[in-house]
Image 1 (spheres, one colour):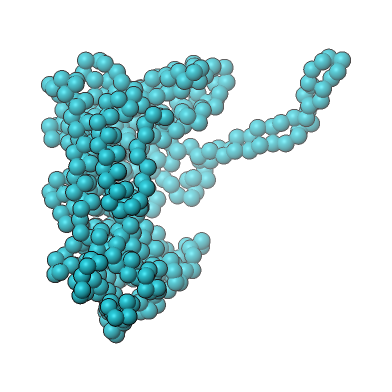
Image 2 (cartoon, one colour):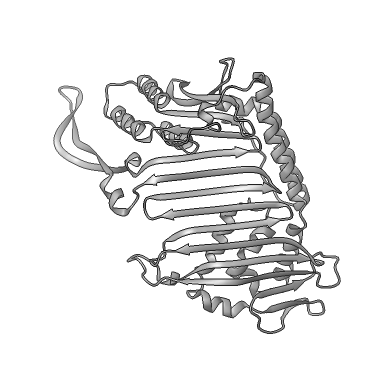
Length: 456
């Protein structure tokens, strides 16, 4: 029996939230949390309100002047045909200028900053070519270079109605890391990697935005730690990634407003994902097709021992690569956390895949059993660690197609599958989100599609 694609997708979704069987114990352990004394309906309403509150916070971010100022700078550069508009050093600023065309997150900011190392081949040469002070000339409607500088400084009118250069974008403090012992497959154009860079945007003397990027590398170019912080008014996006090749890794994204954490996604894992380990844990499946001919006397197809073709497929035993993993999702006062016995779950799945006697329904039931035995998912309040709901796997019947799904289990033992919960219980949040999207579309002339849960 082979696990179906839908089942595999379920595991991807499930394991993106869950953690290993080893988790710290203490008063804040979500897996020891007691149910909240609030009613089930109140708990459901609080989850929905957390989403609405998140949209409200982001609505305030939409009004930040930094986006309008950067957007106008982009218009000036494109209108004047400035070569700077396409320069890789300015990609992070251009990304923020098109905030509502491309969903901005710190991962995107990091990727854009990292891209400064990719073109041209030498990062130092690129910086020496572009660093200067550029000033908007109202008469010629173009940028004039007023000489070399240690930083890249762009002075321009921050708003279309301004009659003087009221805004300044400064990019500087560039630090470069030289890859002295590149790996065999390391690209020559990445002989230099960005180790640090900073950005600041001011308007009429006020700081609207700052950004800092820092990184450390091994001598062969492998990143050891990468951090990026983007501050817009009182909002702060944070990104941090650490990697100890090839045994430990962690990634954290978060968004704060002042001292309040609005959302956070965290993952860390331990194992062995070296090239040697991956090669050792690759399974090859062969599907041999034999030549057949039609026997008119017997009135049936007859299979011969002549091989027509062989299809081969490979699959990595992920449970052998990542032994332990932790993850959590926080939004406002709600935390989703989980744990899984990764190795036991992986071994159980492998056994089920080898059993070709199971029907699809029996296979799904068996898979549900091992998921519930080896994985746990909970939803708690972050402020008092009181439980809102557990989650469990169950067999879902999709018009005769059986596969595992996840549903929430509340204190009164009522159960709601994840799809129904999103479509019904979170409808107010989705309505609020779509209203927010409509406002963005109207204000900025873009066409972001609304959220539609009808086809989940």
